[in-house]
Image 1 (spheres, rainbow, N blue to C red):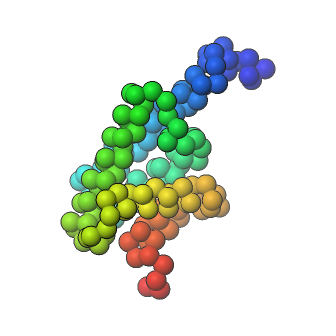
Image 2: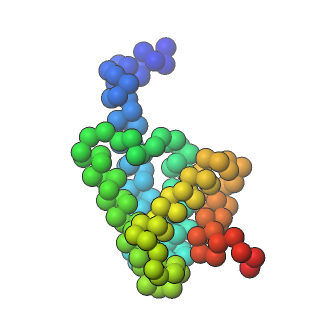
Length: 143
């Protein structure tokens, strides 16, 4: 019964996946706006972002790297550009060391987020955000 309901709205699997990707992109864009990556203090913005994006990643467990269509791909590129700008701001404000390869910090952030969201489901989004921030900003060295 569920599949017939789904296929009334989405005629193909590809259309269904496109709808899921767009819903996840919508949710991600809301998280980015609420995190205020371009104006909130770096640590605060990162924590807001992580709590929100971990929640979204768990609600929509699909890989956005698989998006279809130029419009969706452009939206994803804009999100990555915002993360790159945020990480550059983190470098300029002294939260991340300078001299890293382009997109290194953003890629690390994305991977840490995926670990917190999918490989550590026992963590709450707030706990996952704490772990990501600590791993990103101080590494695994003892504090």
